[in-house]
Amino acid sequence: MRFVIDVFSVAAIGGGVFFFLAGTVGLLRFPDPLSRLHALTKADNLGLGLVVLGLLPRTESLLGALELVAVWALVQLAGATAAQLIGRAVRRQGPAA
Amino acid sequence: MSVLAALDIGLALLVFAVAAWTVFAPGAFAATVGYVVYGLLLSLVWIRLFAVDVALTEAAIGGGVTGVLLIGAAARLRQAEMTTVGEAPSGVTRLFAACLCVLVAAALAGVVLLLPDQGPTLAPQAMERLPETGLGNPVTAVLIAYRSFDTVLEKVVLVLAVVGVWSLAADRYWGGAPGEARAERPEPTLAFFAQMLAPIGIVVGVHIFWVGADEPGGAFQGGAILAAMWIILMMARLTEAPQTNAFWLRLALIAGPAVFLAAGVAGVAVAGGFFAYPSGLAKPIILFIEAFMVLSIAVTLPMLVAGPPRREPRR
Amino acid sequence: MSEFLLATAGAILFTVALGLARVLRGPGDADRIMAMQLIGTGGIASLLLIAAATGARGVDDVALGLAILAAFASAAFVNSAEGEEPVANSGADR
View (cartoon, chains in turn green, red, orange):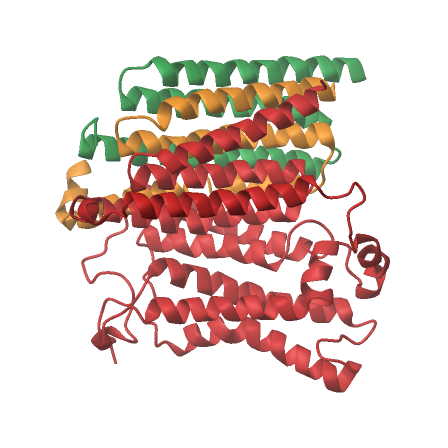
């Protein structure tokens, strides 16, 4: 059983790192701020979600697991809001503000 | 080299790189962003040093209050930056400042690196007397029980800071409300964000204050998160900054240090020493004092961010 | 297992470092504010992994605090950037 949990954690966290990498590649390669913003908020949030998923079985209590999920939900909220706000700033000021 | 050591070295190098970038950044806004990122990276460093209370404070203040203050100021200064470029400090001044900073940093680094392996510490004695205070978190015990006088003075400094900020107002605005007098409408995105976040943030802030007695946390961190909730509500224009001559506001600002000082003075009569707590009652008294400190901090920090009054006081 | 967690934390910090190198240089203010978002998400991920690996207690609360405050810098930036705009402009977004 421990082994199954460990395999699950490794798979999920590995997937999370992959998405962080993907987000950074997008950040480095995309041509303008809006698409970079897209790469940053979408891919990194998904990466964090997978990391949280991988760490869930390792928590000691249900409360700890709920706290992890709450962290992820709050980062989703913050990411969505920040993306909207920064996008509006880019559109108002032009790409090279 | 173990993975942990490699991680530590990588983290340290990243912190150095961001700090170096901040020093050489093009313009005040870029430097400010670099500085806030540096602060958030420092939270990770504090976690690695097992100073979780400090990490919590760094995250709450550096990401929340200070971040808002600095970035807001830097964004507003962008317009003024064009006109001040002629007043930049001369090369000699900069060289002098650089030498001074390097000297201080080298002295600190030398002291830390040359410490004996078993450095002088009072930690064992602090842990030994912990059960008498009824607390489980030694950091809280140091702040409110062993060195409570320092903490009172820190809270008084916060009040002085607010007075200082308010005194920047023109005479006719004294007592008025901060913020420009213009038509305020809730900004849609920020309003949604603030409405979703504020209830959660309030619960988390109170939780972190309450749990600080036994786990990492405490009044300052909890108060900082509560302050951030009021700040985001003001930024989203869902609520206005109060008038600075409002009685409840001024009462809330001084409540923390006042209750703390009162408890300290009462200790003379009740427990035989300035800031002494009667044995057995220490924990309830500490939590009582901390509750008022949370109130004061949650009111003081947003007032610092809101700035000096810019409207005439209404009667 | 804890070594794997630490290694992934290091990998995520590395991607954050790469992203910072690109984003802090970015030609505009909006690019630089993205650094906040980057360090917020990546920092929280590394934090959770390091905490799970080293067993430091109370780190969940730090992650919670960071998550709550993640968008504050961006909000402050937008708030002050549109401080000089006439109010009518915010209706133009509808």
